[in-house]
Length: 186
Image 1 (tube, rainbow, N blue to C red):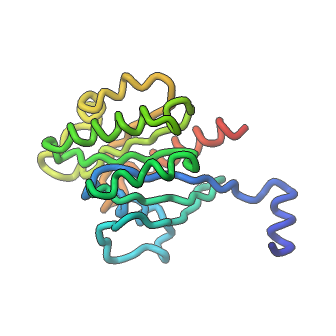
Image 2: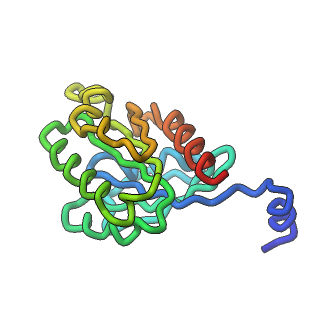
């Protein structure tokens, strides 16, 4: 640790690091969202499906995020639970244009919420109703209804309509998540 890092830590200027799990079915836009949240000079031009998981970092005004971008392919979803204990927040991405797989997303969400490492924790969950730019996308209100988000009473949650390719809705979500994480940490 360098002198400047030590000084900024002592003065309270160093950004707190938080671990965030980014979950959702495959092809929902998780990797594209995380890529868009990174500084423009660190963004990838080609987004490929995540196999297993990848770790990405980005910063907000007061936090340093380490994001575990977990594959949403069915054969990898059982790996999610191995990271629940370390997660301080969850980003759950839903493809709002894929009404056929909304039921599967709801099942995965229910499994997550009932897992012993999540169930009794007041962990904030940010939902991105992604792909709002597509013609057959349903509104974030409709996504919320289809996933029965109103039943989540013991955790702070928020849903944002998003278009990951253009970056629309992402900052609103990150601002909310940052506020929730800081409220827990203080």
